[in-house]
Image 1 (cartoon, rainbow, N blue to C red):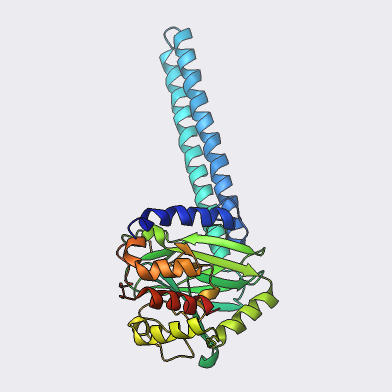
Image 2 (cartoon, rainbow, N blue to C red; image 1 turned 90 degrees about the vertical axis):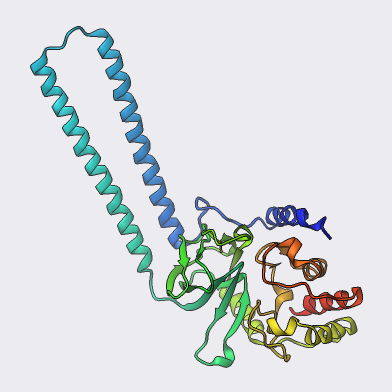
Length: 332
Ligand code: CUA
């Protein structure tokens, strides 16, 4: 099993390459990210112009110094004072301008129109708990590491750190926002185009900080509604005998003490809600693609795949492991 350890990053890189997920602040498909990209370009253009001007003046001064003899002191003093004053005034104007632009963009992003949907995102070491609240508690549901949103709608994310400070960053959609224990931060996102947008925790939060990815899946409203309706439903007992055995294993082993599977007696709150885990693209916060094999590998040795995480090793026979992974995969 030790050998699987180094395979994890390779598999996740392959998975990423295969998914063609966008994760770049320059490949933007969200209202806030588009504004921020324009701001980045403005900064780059202005700073490049300033740099070129400074280098130009430097070269000119070097050339001129070599060519001229003793400068006439009164005239020289006047020119020097004028040059310094111009440089100071230019610096003040440019820095004030960039600061003002920065302020205006942030202000505009913060005031994006009323949210069509509010989603609670909690950062934990090292995964994302995603809660879709509803006035009617029976319609609320929970998932992990994957946020589905309807495209073209403004979504308000309520962000909270459960243990340490994390930072939510999906560069193609919006800027960063910290998840701080005891604080309620918000972030508004809106995807302008359907797609899968990868995000990554952007605040060092411990050993597995780099394995704390999140996917935002923006889809047409009808598709989103279909997904949400399926998520609201309780898990369906599979008729496959192996999965049925796996369900018994899950309920009788410590699994049920940490994970919830709605529709069963499993109601643990420590780990991710697994009601529809088989329908998610990845497990362990983007570490592995959700397949029966990766579920089995994860359960068999979570500490080799993601050292330091809170998932304990539950001793299982190979038959139990096979059945359990078949059951979890069946939870679509
Ligand atoms: Cu969570 Cu870094």
